Image (cartoon, rainbow, N blue to C red; front, side, top):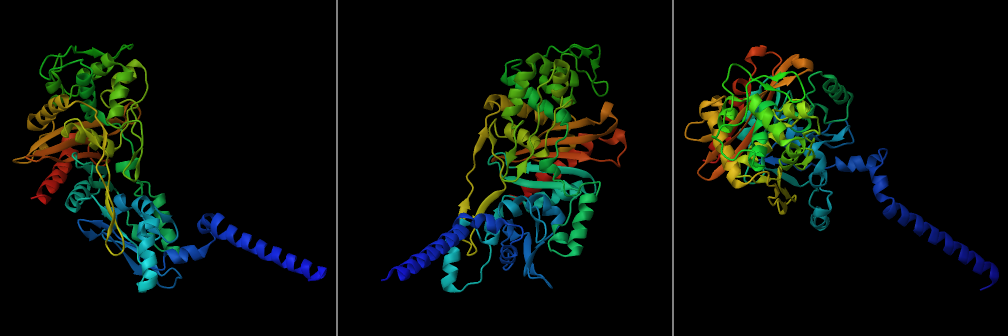
Length: 485
C-alpha cells in the first residue's frame, strides 16, 4: 500500500474510532443524564406509553390508568376516592412528576426498575404488552375510611400502626385533594394544581407525616416513661413529690392545671388520668433536659422517619430549665407529627419495643410474581417490658375512668391519653385536640392510633382531646378489630 492510501486508511480508522467512543460516551457514560434531561420528551412519552402498575389496598387497586385524548402521552393516572388515598399514594402527573409512593416506587409502577429486567426481557420474546408492577400496601381500607369519615370537614390527621409489626394501617390528612385533577398535562390540569397550591387550607400538605404540632398532654406518656426508666419513680401508685402550686424553675410564675383537679403529690397513674401539668412539668425538670431528650429520641424524636415516604423529624429541643419543664407537658418548642405520637402509643402497647413503621408490604412484577417482601424490623427499645406494662395500666385507667372515656370499645381493653395543645402566641389561637391510644385483644395489640384535630369552627371551650379526637381514634381501632374477625 502506497503512503497516500495508508494515510487515508489511518484517518478513516481514527474517524471510526472517534465515532465508537462518542457513541459509547453518549449511550453509557451520559445515559442517565440524558434520560433525566427535562427536554428529552422521548423518555416521558415512553413512560406514559403503557398502563402504570397499581397501588393495592386489601387486595384491590386504589389507582388505575386511562387513555389520554389529544396527547402523545397515551395513559394517565386515576384514583379511586383520591382525596381519601392521596396522603398514602401521593400524585403522579404527566406535567408535574410524582410524589410519595407514586414517586418512590416509580420504577416498579412504570415497569422500568432493574428488579423487573427479567420480565422486560421475557416480554420481548413473548410479545406481551409492557405494563408496570404493583405495590401492595399495609393499609387497612376500613380503618382508612373510618379515619377519613371521622375527620370530615375538620383540619387534622390520623396515623394508625400495628404495634407488633410496624405496619401502617391508616394515614389520613384533611382537607385533602384529588390527584386525578392534575394527572394530565393540559392547561386545565395546570390550573387545578395552581388552585390547590393557593388554597389557604393547604390540602396538599400531608399533615400525618409533614406537619409538626405541639403534642400537648399526649407527651406526658413520654415523660412518664422517662420517670420510670430513670428510676425517678418506680411505682405508679405511690405519691410523687409534686407541690401545688408548682412554680416553674428560675421564674416567678406558676404552672397551672386545667380545672380544679387534685394534683398535689398525685401518683403517676392519677396524674395521667386527670392530666396534671404540675406533676409532669416537675418530672421533666427533676430529670433535666438531656435525660428528657434521650428518652424522646428512643421513641423516634429528633430524626426523620422513612416509611418509605419521609416523615418530618419531631423535635424535643435542647432548652433552658423553665422551657424544658414546659416541653415535658408537650408545650414550648416540643413538636411532633401524628405518626410520631402513634409510634409512642405503639411502643407502650408492644411491651416497650418500637417497630420501624412501613407501608409497603410487597412489590409485585406485572405477572404478579412477588419480587420483594418486607421483613419487620425493630427500631428501638424506648422502655423495658416491665415499665411498658406499668404505662399500659396508667393509659388504660385514662380510658376506664379518666379523660379518655369516649374511646371505650365494649369487650376490648383500650389505653389512651388525651391532649389539648396550646397554639399561638400566649395561647391566642384555638388549641389542637389530640388523642393517642391502643387496643388490646387476646392476641396482643393490633392497632395504635394518634389523632390530631385543628377545629377552627368549634367554640374554644368545646375543644378537647377527649371530645374531638378520642371518638375518631375509637372508630379507627374498632374498624381494625372488626376487620380481623
